[in-house]
Each structure stands twice: as structure tokens, then as C-alpha cells.
Image (cartoon, rainbow, N blue to C red):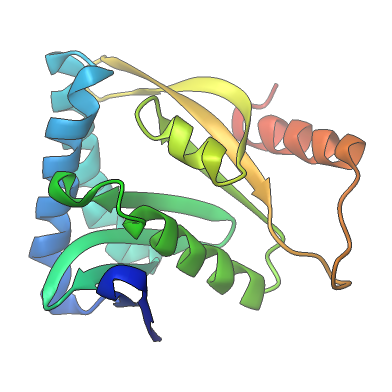
Length: 188
């Protein structure tokens, strides 16, 4: 899958040789973009968590997309059934539609697999992006790092597609789905 979008953004499936660039983008985005929402200890815990998640991603067989401008990788997203596992854009390329295109690639892939709802554990920094993309918060939560640092975040979800073209899920049904996800994720 390769798609070219406005501003010459090309979205394609990641290749093994992209791994180091993907990790660099994730590290830079956490260090720079999240610094306004998290303290230095939380940033370090997020970096440690991201490194662990990178190694686990290979075992999970995530579908990973990269965004390129020219030959330069400027962002990536990772998806596994029902979950947006990662979406990062290099700090020099934010607010250019790259994150939106990466999210659209994930949502399109999910719909092609008949997945109607996606969930994400969004950082405080990313929450406004997901809200603007139609995701709704259903639970405030946190990541508890291995060093005991609590990192606040939000569990969010979005209804993507339906079996009948144009069919919309009633808002009370959306609430039931949110509560179901909350129960699955938190046991509450």
C-alpha cells in the first residue's frame, strides 16, 4: 500500500530498514512535543515505555505505516486489531496533515478488516489531535512505568464504519460501546 497525499506526503507500509528512523521519530516527538504536558521524569518514563513497546511491536505483528516527504520518513503509525498502538510525527513536521493521513491509513485498514471501532491510549499531548479526528474519551487513565512513575493519559475510541453504507450508530449505542471498552480495559 502506497498513497500520495497533498503536500507530497506519501504513506506506505514500513519496511524492516525503517526501524531506526521510526524509533528516532518516536524519541524526538516524546522529548520535544510532550515536554509541555509532562515533567522530565515522566518524559524519561515515556521514552523507556516507548523503547519497550518498540520491541514488543515486532512480536505483536502490528501493521506499521510510515509517512514520507521525498525520501525522508517524517512520521509513523502502528495498528493492531482494535487498537491504535502508536502515531508519531517528527516535531519539525507537525501541523502539516501528516498525523491525519497516518490515522486515515490505520482507520482504512481497520475498516478493510471489518473492525468498526478503534481505541487508543492517548497522551495528554495527543488527546486534542484524536478529539479533532472524531475520537471520544471514555476513561482517564495512566501508564504506570516500571520505575513507578505515573503518566496520565486518556482512553479514547471512535466508531469507524458500519455494515450498511451511511448507517450511523445511535449515540446511546456509542455510550454502551464506550462502557464495554472501559470494562474490558479496566475491569470497572
